[in-house]
Length: 162
Length: 162
DNA sequence: GATATTGATTAATACCATGAACAAATCCAC
DNA sequence: GTGGATTTGTTCATGGTATTAATCAATATC
Image 1 (cartoon, helix red, strand yellow):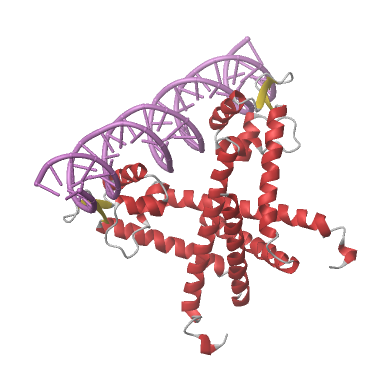
Image 2 (cartoon, rainbow over the protein chains, first blue to last red):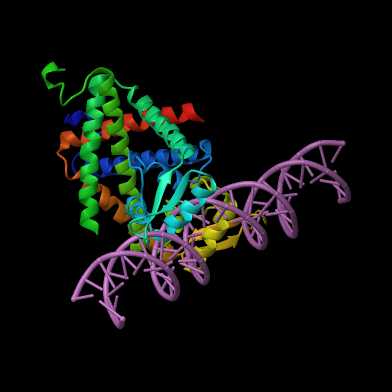
């Protein structure tokens, strides 16, 4: 690093502190931006955030159980019961009893639920594509690469917490 | 791009779709990681997330008002009243009447509040420094640069939504 | 067949957040 | 300076998010 730029680009410990603060700020802004987007989505599709998240779990899978939904959303089963209550009231999911196992309730999307899920998925894809399209091909690779490294580093630190 | 790697690195529209999905996934993982960290912090410092966020608003400033806190936290004033109620019960803030303007309540951190704020700030700095320290100097610059570009691109797209 | 386990629901509790209605203080215009 | 508008903060009703403990029915295990 060029020593003549010391006034603007700190060195040594000062540099690390500076970069740490910068990283903290940038991550905070990104997260904040994503949260705003989720609120926007929730309003645009007129669904509580939790129901939206639940809606997007049914990728190819025809049926899910309360337990599997709870695991994927990382919430308690009782929370899922509440969420499904709302979604059923909106006609997005239907519950049927498993003929093989009477304890299990099979949750599936209604046609309306599938339509909504597809619309939301398309919207999310659109958003992220628009972000990417602001960059040239090479820069896209760089950014994705950097993000991947960062994500891994963050998970490592998170594991260290536990 | 080398055509012989087409099986693993898609081209053209397929490449864009692939990168879009990748970006979406990575951003999602990062946000999720941050949210987990906030839950961890909340437990570690035995404070609700909203109170933690509020605690960190008092940087140098001696006094804040309910209104200014509401603006910074981007929540309704009535929410701030509730948050401060909790913080006061924990002995983190004190409210005094403004001698100049009887409508205004001046909110300030108690010594205990300042201690807590400092501890939380130190913890956050530590976390982000640990993330950075997993990279070499050059890579740190790259990642921060990429993150900055990405942040800006995300804000641009967000503005386009509105 | 008695007991343990599993899957789902219910109820109690707590946190996050908003909007409407309100009271008190201040501002401002005349 | 009095009267109306604005500003500041609180209270209240409501709704979304999420957990834990208790419970119940069905299944699995022995």
